[in-house]
Image 1 (cartoon, rainbow, N blue to C red):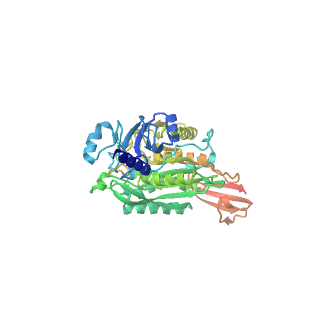
Image 2: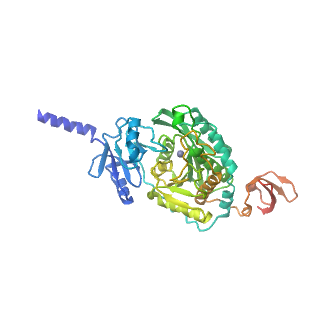
Image 3: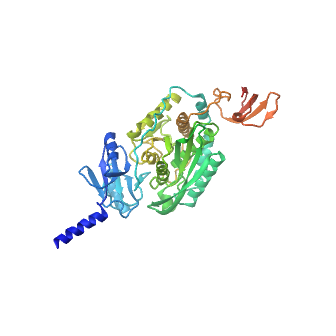
Length: 485
Ligand SMILES: [Zn+2]
């Protein structure tokens, strides 16, 4: 009898293999994280500077077993940002059991309502990749006049128009008709700029329900020399508030995150007027608020396809100014320090007076994390990690109380352009005028031949010859220049 049982157990082991456990391993230093990525016993799903979440074949003493077997009845685990002092009340409210909790976070095996603000990350049964820079970031020593010209074109009215338009949807909850309409509207804006546009559908299983989310919008501007190497920026367009979920209120999401979408679209509006050696991708994601679903769907596909991405720049909340000095708080893990250094470098060359800090934010997260976890260097320049808009995720996330400074949004957008452009390398034709002395937006230009006849052509696409270009700026100033092509 005993023998039979032993045999039966052996057969079961042979059929099912070992039970795989969902584990947490504290790291705290990058070398340890790197070693874990090399460990064939582990399939890593998520990592940050402090810990790794993985499926382990064999459990050892360094692992905290959170769940076993792993991913048995759930598609994902959820990290929720909630400080120790609030955890008891929070658990009572959501009526769920946490697999783990420490001073700042809790981990669940089911989708749960976030504690407060942006505070949930869904961790799927996919293999993460450690972020590596496949090449060094350039060290910028002086301004590029063409890039400065791009930055000078960032227009506050244009930013405000986009924020107002998105705010006017009242709410853009991830699977609502409004969110789908917003996705279509952003796709239309990108198409009008001549980008290759794709709307990437994806499925989400969230604490508010499951189904198709409003699709990501991905717009590509092809590089002239390296069309298959990319520089990426992105923002989420969905919004969220408890008032909108439970009736009686809206979630206009002006600061969170119409301002980010405005920055991405304004960058595209300006940068599509130029050619670059590398391709630039402009993204707008759905369903960030429920756990970074949209960016996860896109970044994991980029990893799967082996796309080479030189850097990812996130745009999420840039319109609430606390105090009177515009400043930028950069959120990123130490594991992607090279892109952090690069951001600071670009800032110090173009805006030496602008305070930029690297901060550790433990009240939430955003879409750069999806890129970091799929092998890419991504960074999140944020409005202020201690004093961000108090109105996000409420009916009051509006222009005025929540977006109180388009000057600040303009600064963020200029930095976004600077970082993208320095990496993507603008193609500078010596014969094309750089109106760097003109600190005004050009609204129109006409090209004339030497006989004074108007030549109905783009200044970048002229046949050889001598031409006169007449620029009109937004303030109504007119400037004439002679160019030789
Ligand atoms: Zn956000």
